[in-house]
Length: 114
Image (tube, helix red, strand yellow):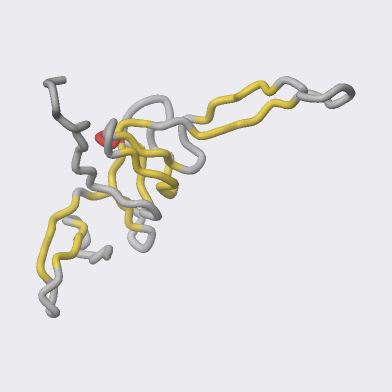
């Protein structure tokens, strides 16, 4: 990185709370909710997708260790917005609604998300 520059953030097409479908990778076809968006790395964390197991050592004497399952991040290009009403994944377009606000709309169904 050049001297004096800030960390680059990428524009991500999904927001926290969106329902998305995974379109590539080992979890292809799975549908879940976006729990967190990481714009610095252009990745998203989706509920129930890219499950990783974490082994936790016991911290105190007599305490037992445990195995936790957590969702790992996946690249935002591997997810597509999903319409729960029509059960179809679609690209999005940005349109202006009646009040003059910029909103996200599914291209396949015409459903407004925001």
